[in-house]
Structures are given as C-alpha cells and as structure tokens.
Length: 197
Length: 226
Image 1 (cartoon, rainbow over the protein chains, first blue to last red):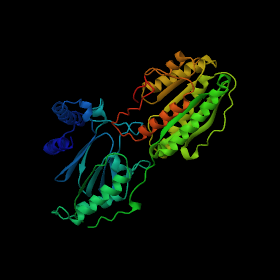
Image 2: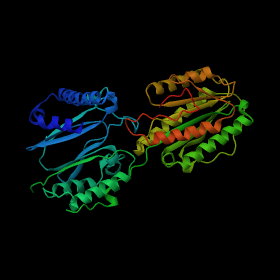
Image 3: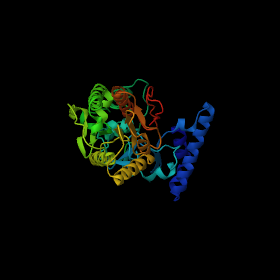
Image 4: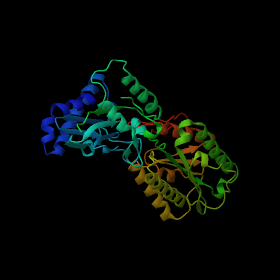
C-alpha cells in the first residue's frame, strides 16, 4: 500500500502539483490505492477489509513538495527552523477508530497538501504508535526529537554501510525507545536535506 | 551526526481511557443477598482491573445508583482513586430512567474533561443492572431509552443491560439494547459477570484502530463483539 501510494505521488508529481482540482485528485489516489487493496485481497483470498490501512505519503521534486494522508498518524515538517504539523491524526471521537483507505468517506477524510521547499529542512511521517513518543496529543505539536531526527537524516552520509553507527543509533532509538513507549504499531519515515544558508 | 535524543525531547501522552459507567438498581427488592453480592461483584471488578496491567491504566469507573431517587455514588476515577464499597442500602422504588440519564450526564461531562485535557478515550460502556420493573417517571424512562439507543446507533456507546433474577423486566432492558439481547444473571453470578467485564475492559484497552475486539463470550451466550 505504501509503495503504491508513493509511486502514485512520484509518477504523477508534476501533474498533481500543478492541478487545481484537489477533490478529483483525492478520488484518483484512492482509486489507485483501492485497486491495489482489491488485488491483494483477491490474491490472498481475503476480504478487502482485512487489508484496511491508513496512508501517509510525501514526495518532493525540484523546489516543491506534495503529500496525502488518510487516517491516523502524523505528518510534520521542519521549516525555517520551526517544527510544524502538516496533518494530524484523524481519530474520529474514539482512540481505536479512524478512517482507512477502504472506509466509506475516505476521500472526504483525505488531507492533500503541497508547497514550496523554500526553507524546508525535511519531513517526518509517523503512525500512531510512533506518535505516542513523537506527537503531543494535547497540544497537537511534534516532540522536539522530530527536529533532531530530520536534521540527523539530512546530515547523514549519502552512503552508509549495513551496520554503520548511524543505522545502529536509529535502530536503538526506534526499537527500544519508541517501540517500548506504545502498544500500537510503530512506523516512521523521515526525509532530511541540507538547506543552503 | 550523533542521534542524541533525551527524555525531554520526547512526549509522554496519557494512556487512552475506557470509561465504564455502572448504573445499579438499589431498590428495596435488591435487599439481602442481591445487594450484598452486587457489592462484592463491584469490589471484585475493581480488584481485577487493579491486577491487569492494561486495564489498570485505562479503565475509569463511575457508579450511579437508582432507587426512588438517583445519586452518583462514584464519579469517574481511575482504579487508584476508586474506594472499595463497604455496603449499599437497598430501599425504595426503581427510578431506572432517571438513573440512566444521570449516568449519561456524568459520562458526557467526563468526555468533555478528556477532550479538554487532550486525553484520548475508547467508546464508553454503560452497564445497567436491575432486578425489577421501572416505576420512576415514564417520560424520564423514554428519554433514557432514546438517548441510549441514539448513542448506540451512532456507535458512541456500548450498553450491557443485565437483569438480576426472575423478576427483572427483560422487555424494558431490551429497549436499551437494540443490537443484542439483555443478559439475565442466573442465581447470583455477579462474580462471573464482573470477572468477564474486567477481562473485556482489558481487551478493549489493548485495541488499536482497525481491531475488531472479540470478547470472551463463554458463559455469556448471545453477546456480540464490540
């Protein structure tokens, strides 16, 4: 699902970022995601609802970015030195309920966004489990750690060995600190880049 | 660059809550073994929640009693703030509608408190237990039925109507629960019921979006998933 959604954002980036019909874009993205879900369900002989999932994706190209978000989890970015939330969790009223790409009304719930990369150091995307450590549900703000994660990715060497110190530090952080702080699934995606001063 | 993240760089969100409202008949007909066993059952419920790692942090319980009048004998509180009950006096009539309305009002206030404090919560539960027929104000009963069934239809409330003994009016209880039949406690099986309830709270408190919480229904036939 993540691969399919990201592929859709990347392959059609130039077209999507220029279009004004956001509502239609949401429908098209969902149709592509649902086609993937249907194919998976058929292949495994399961119900479509068994493959219900949320989706968070951001793509960058040139001096622009775009992204889409359905369901819970958080997408944020670091711009001009400030951590900002782009898209917060959609949990309805109750914590164990959210909108999935397979839900009725998923298009209405999808958040679609785009913007200039001017001043943007990077993005962070996280599932609810990672959000337990990295997103304050009361203030709706990202934890300070998010800035460090984005900066660390942006300044990491372009080539890393399998067991580099950098990767070990990340594994330790995610596998121990983030994972142990939640009973929920943990996924996290970080995009970082160096910004010319 | 070293990934130097300290505790201050992370947030610690409060555990999402499972609010459980107990709405209990303490009318005169409950006098004797019924009320004693009910009190024992509630205390056992507290103990079971206390001993369960997940339910301990998540469950918040309130108790409304109804007889000829209604009162909130325990506002919503986590297990560490819940006082064990020594005894409850059983007396008077059965103002069931008024009791349910007070339980729902208390629940609404608690949900506002959660929202204002940024505390996430699960779908609330209402456990309604009675051994007789309602004889409070008919308009209050109708209002209570309407409120509960609306909330259930909107998936904003899970209701467990429980009849105690042979004289409980199961038809009235069924009106509160369009999706599943009310349960009649056979004999004085409060203990089993409250054990089941605490286990169910624990299961729900471990659930995440997309989970269908299957409850352990052995011995509680006819009950469906939440």
